[in-house]
Length: 254
Image 1 (tube, rainbow, N blue to C red):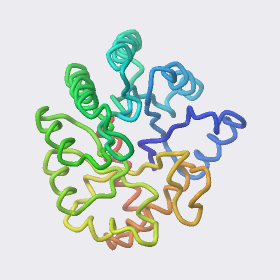
Image 2: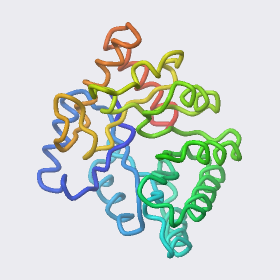
Image 3: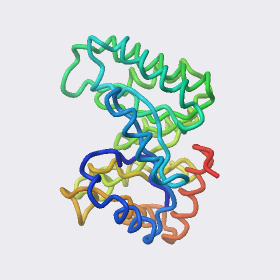
Image 4: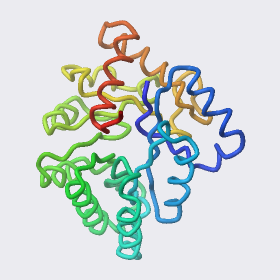
């Protein structure tokens, strides 16, 4: 299994990190991708990945909830860091749109997303897209960048939207939400090929049942894979094989 989205730079993992990583490896997690969300954690993301080379891989991005009046300065800092460490970053993310709590910087979020998608195109890097209560705007902006590679992180939307995303050539990131009792995602994956799914955790958030509410761990993706095995009526091993292959192809992991 490959965890395509986990915030391992979070302070919650600092104590006992080496043992934590060893446990993920022992339980079948081949690699973990670590997205960036703001300028303040740029170094932390890179440094934690340097501790486990070839296992943790960093991405860089300004999360939409961190878009403020200083967004231009933040993007300048990030772009300079991207240029200085171009050989380290595996993707642009976590980027996107989020209108859930606040729309004060709605227009700025859209501009920030476009600029970061431009980075991805210029450097031929995949993107990790966050979209909450902003589906139409997010998809319209993505359509402006034909051929963009990436994943719709933490997907929990409709079947119609899932088909639109896949039609654009993007992947769906499936995490703990699919294990939740009232989640409709099981039904909403109808017609979506396994070849367009990757596994993720969004750790430390979104832990699957039976660990819901706890600090999430990459090894718990097996509960997500178990549900997908039921949905697609294939063995767990097939889910593991296909989603791992998808992640390796998308992020060009060796």
